Length: 371
Picture (cartoon, rainbow, N blue to C red):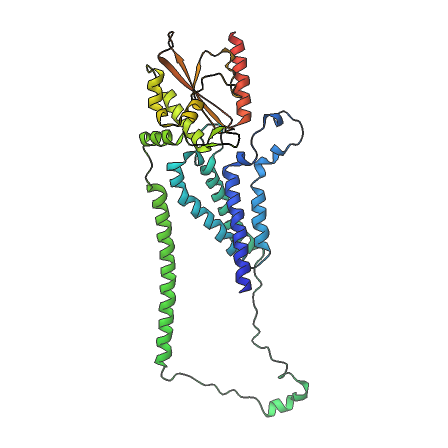
């Protein structure tokens, strides 16, 4: 009972490490966000350890596997459980929260897609190392059975016989040939046992094959939203928010990602071209947003963004969604009278501080070239 409890605890600890491994491979920027201050620092910085973060959960897993028996069983059970769970969640996240599966912006990491790929590579490498290489380098010692071995009682010197005694009275073995009629009851029980073993083995393999097939069908056939359905989903989600203890309304992280996708759709397809402000607000569904938060979203005063310098921009801030770190802004350019929207542009900031700084510098250099 104690051994089973310890085995279960080790499995849970290794399972936690496997989850941390997948998270580290998928979302390293959440653990160590890019910092432009450290970009120009000479010598060693903590950011140089970022590509090696995945080794920490791997070492944790190896530690708990090493301190007990059934190391491979614990290792592959935990790794396989996390892989199956991640694959099962993948199509749901892809349909409902695509920002967790693939990057919203080009300078984001590979997200869950990349994490699963690297995780599968590590799992495959574990099979090669643990089940092939280590078994080849450290084979199990074979068990030798000596056919001529005798017990100490037989080899007792007090019962020893001389060569003359052995020659005069040799030990003759009387062979017994058991070629009589077989015991049908034993044969029947043996057949039943073999059938049961074959049935269990076949059933287990069938269950595994059906499970793999079902998981594959789930991943590839789970219904995904059409572009129109995805746009409606994001329009409904982009206004979810919370109120801080200071009374400031902030969007959720999912809302900022959804808002950026909606704004990108508006910008790429010029959906607001020819609309006035009221028509654009109705298209965005702002009439259903609480008045206090709607005023916060529709604030048209200039706001500094770390990714761009708006000092020389003749555009108006039309919609702003932010969660305290990330921000998505929809700018508009109107006609001379200011009552019709000509162009709508989306601007982001806060996803990657290094990318923001580089874009701001590039924009300033490019603007200074033409000024």
